[in-house]
Image (cartoon, rainbow, N blue to C red; front, top):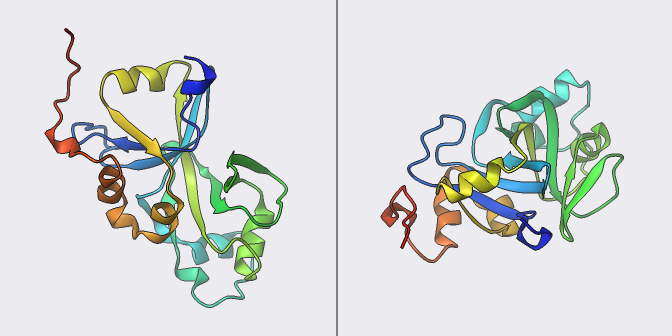
Length: 187
């Protein structure tokens, strides 16, 4: 697969037939994709804790009303003890990766401190864990019709309620994925 075919900054939308409990009806943002594999963050599956719980564990004082009640997401089944923050571009943080010109993935504590103090990125999403694919694995899953992809829409990512993100992401495709068969045809 050439670099032009990598899926960085794409939504991966689980097909209705994907029955893996980790990925059924999920929307994931592909943050890195290359010949060695891919890393994505699931953005529509809330964890059982809120941001205030995590900040308390990290001994970060919340100074902004409403921050503590924000949901945290199960970013995927890999390393669920590791935190990731998807956010709009704003200040630079110790450990950020440019997913796109307008989107960053940060793994350092300083972004959480900034959010708790009200000086962090206005639009952000905090997740524990990530979805990972080994070399060629995501490409095979795409061939097997497990996923559809479309460019990330920041308004959908940050402003659409999480329980509606799968339906909103499928609407970006301009067809009904429920109408697709779960197998590939060959002529």
